[in-house]
Length: 417
Image 1: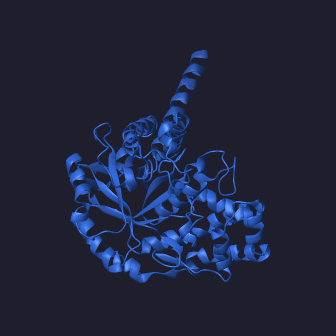
Image 2 (image 1 turned 30 degrees about the vertical axis):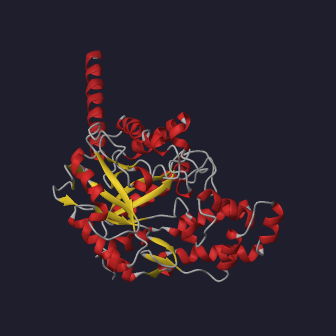
Image 3 (image 1 turned 90 degrees about the vertical axis):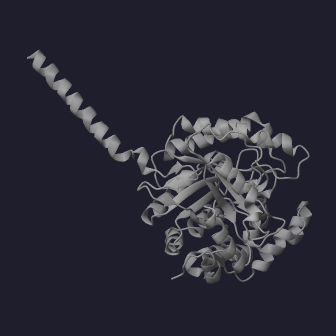
């Protein structure tokens, strides 16, 4: 009798293990479910070639001053400081929550998909994955919840998603773009580098089985060209890439990792090794200049030399004729693109936000001298009116309230319904 009981227990355990294995295999996509690299091409799971075409969800999870019409107040930290000085931290915390709830919604992703775009690049701040104060939250940061929403919306609309750490610990650029203190401390700080790798490892572990995500872009526009020790900093970029890639590969072998060049993602000379991982590609940025192949020939030559995909992660803010001409140049040279940005105040985007009544008082405060408390008091607009104006901006930022920039979209050879 005892032997029969043991046998039944063993059979039960085997059945349970088999069921668990079947459940795990049902939720764990096979490696071929992910976009892969073949030489200079991206390849879809069905075997066909894939050329990235899309836009960037800038300003949503990493606010940038000019997209609000601000000039001096140009980084996430400075925007938050200015708003707190104007209307107080409690209101600002609620403002950021409503901003994140409304600035990008399912309807935005559906609209992007309707244009014929196939990819979205999502810039985010590293603080969304720490206990630091950011956009009205501290210990209860909502980075995964916000990205999860976009992942689901992209899946429903057959779009791919690139996760872009736009603001890294310590700052990787040394300008407003990375929300830093005016220097790329990331490259001189061991604690910042460790945090950088830890956050990417956490993100990669969380999304390792998500085929909607095309890849992870490690850092945006590292090392501005303003620093006397620029070449010394440049020499630290590839070693940091290798360290972060190794951390990601401890948990995720599925996803492509995107590496941007130094000096606004334009200088690839610091890169000497493209063989340390079999799923890396490169990403460049460009604003202005001539809309010709000659203008990016150095980037093309680098791409050809390493024989890996190159993608233009940011481009835009130019005349429609220029953008149309350069789209042809990129496509002729097998370079995908995501135009910057998707949405901002006024124009030069897929969707333009209408400035609410009284917005000029918000802009005036953002530009006013505020280095002393007296200057803050003297410049501060009437608080209740300012609060109402800020909430109106949020309402205006919803896609159904925006002005669709048809000529901008059509210049990219996309369509508008």
